[in-house]
Image (cartoon, rainbow over the protein chains, first blue to last red):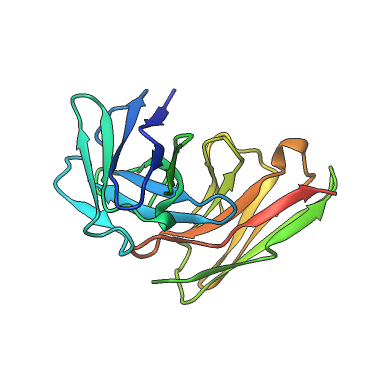
Length: 120
Length: 107
């Protein structure tokens, strides 16, 4: 069974940093991966993606220059390093698997998510 | 960026009803349209891809249609587990964008 489990969320002050992790199991970890966030009471927003080999990365304009996506294929783990955090970054962060090695704007399956709260 | 607009934003229905949610893209996206179900505390779930292809394991009461700019998701014979929030998502161009969501509630 394909499973994605996120961790690393928590409460952080504006301007602070946090690193999220997503551990994958149940599939050959060669596919592109993404982070998508869900603002409570609002909608979904794609945040970042990375190719299967990790050589190509993609970011939403809202996080470019502040967030860094990476992966460790030997550990089947995806990361999102978040810095200069803002109140508007508060959300549940989900990781999701792509269907191809190259990123294809595809999200299936998803993890349950980890909550990031940015507040003073 | 391609803007996705869903309607209605919320919907009340009863078990056994048929409901339809619509999604409009700000420009043509062929059939690069997916439907995603979100329940609080659960992993979001892909229901429909390519506008009309039901994802493996998804009940056949979920159907999708449309192309270009206008799309619909229809749920036949509503079941208790179907009450959730539904999002359309375009995969035509980067960045992928989502509709604002349609919350389906029990009447």
